[in-house]
Each structure stands twice: as C-alpha cells, then as structure tokens.
Amino acid sequence: MILPHGTRMLEAHGTRILLTTHPILRHTKMLVTLKEALEDARSRHYAVPAFNVTEDVMARTVMETAEAKRAPVILSCLGAHLAGNGWTYLAGLIKMAAGIHDVPIVLHLDHATDPKLIGEAVDNGFTGVMIDGSSLPFEENAAATKAVVDIAGPKGVSVEAELGHVGGMDLQDAECAENVLTEPDEVARFVDRTGIDALAVSIGTAHGMYRAEPTLNIDRLVELDAASRVPLVLHGGSGTPDEMIREAVRHGICKMNIYTDERVAMNRGVDQFCKSNQRIDPLPEDLFGSIKKELSALVAEKIELLLADGKA
Image (cartoon, rainbow, N blue to C red; front, side, top):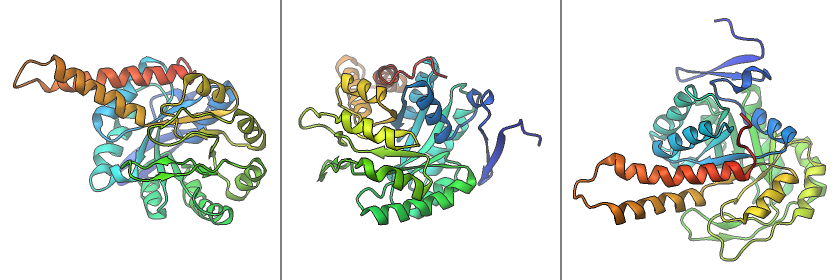
C-alpha cells in the first residue's frame, strides 16, 4: 500500500489506522496524534477540548458536535471504562467512527498509572496516552514517565504527563486529594528528562464538583508556559468560571479536560425527559435524544470557550 508523504500506518489487532504529520493532510478523515493537535493549538492560541467518554452515545455526540463546530477534539478514555469489552465497544467505536469525520480527532488514554494499561492502549491504536505520576516524588515521576515514552514514542503515540498535582474528588466522590502547584523551575528539567509531548500542570483547578469557586494562578501559568517547550494541559476544567478558562488559554493552556460538566448535562437531559414524557413505553430515541441534546449543547459551549471552533 502506497501512503501519502508524511503518513504512516499503525496496525493493532487487525485494525489499521492512518497517522499523519503532513501539514495539509492532517485535517483529513483520520485520527491525529495528541502532539499534532496540541502543537497546532499552541501555534494558533486556542485549546483543544478533551471530553471523557464512557459509552457510544457520548462518543457519537462529541464527534458529531465537533464536526458541526469545525473543531479538533480529543476523546479521552479512563482505564475503568476500557475494562473487558471496553477496548472494542468504546475504543474500537471511536477508531472506526473517526474515519467518517473530517475534523482532527485524538483517541487518548487519560490518567493511567499502570504501565500494562498504557501498553494495551498503545497496542490498541490510541494516538495519545497520559501517564499520571503526579503523586510521586519528582525523580520517581520522571523515571516512570520516561519508561512510558520509551514504549509509546517509537510507535508514534504521544505522551502526556503531570507535574505538580491536581487534587479534588475521585470518581466515586469518596476521597479528596490536595492540590500541589507545579513549580516552574522543575518544568524544563522534567520535559528534558522524559521527552514528553504535553504537560499537565496544577494552577488551582480540581477534579470533580467544586465546593467553592476556584482561583487560577495565572501568574504561575505564565512562568510555566515560559519554561516549557511542550504544550500545557489543564485538568479539572469542569465548573471553573469561563473568564478564568479564557485567561488560561490566553496564557498557554492548549488542552482542557472535561468530564464532570458532561455528567451534569446528561443528567439534566434525563430529568427533562422524565418531566416531559407521558408514555409508559417511551421510544429509546426520545430518551437518548434528550441526553444527546444537552450533551451536545455543553460540547459546543466548551469548544467556543476554548476558541477551538473553526480551527479544523
């Protein structure tokens, strides 16, 4: 098979994915790497939204809305949602469906701590992986991250890491971790030691629902951006005031993770369906339609907030 200049074929478990670094071909119907997506965002001063998806309804809604907004988008998966058949039903669906959308789509593994899980993602055609060693001391974090880069890099898979620690509630809303702000004087050393493609930093956001309105440390972000030769990532973006998000994008954030806001929007769709539905045998398209409507509105809102609309 003859491939266009600047492209290569990634094959895993019988699935072929076309990857490209070609500046003209990169916005065609194919997956792109996290590095490609974020380098474009950094050069054009916007941020790519990263939506966590757990089911096909979420994946379809995010991709179709991103295409309607002409925006690049990252679909992130957590290890808990890939267990068992998730590699096929979720990741497999995204890989296949990306081929019918003419906007850049990244398939990304989010917040992984297990090298085995990261290896599975690389083998299953993910175009970005995140190794989260943020709870480790600097040296251990750097060593664990470098080991992942050595696995993923040769196969063309981008690697995101975290320095400092974004705290907040876990997925079960049972435990709360404290924030540890990223130190600017550690950034360049960490990037050089590891060879990562993107760096998640801690500047005041938190995972989960906020108990009080956060305050982002934009002065710290300016220092971090100046010290980093790779694009910066903001985790815990849900619930952060819009003006703070815009300020963060203006000062170097190139990717923002979103999950809690998605769940809130989907639950709002369920509530609206229950209040308006009068049938004892409601049609599935009506139930899912309400959920998709609210989720799509949220996705479009975040795309515009991050200045990503029209960037594809």
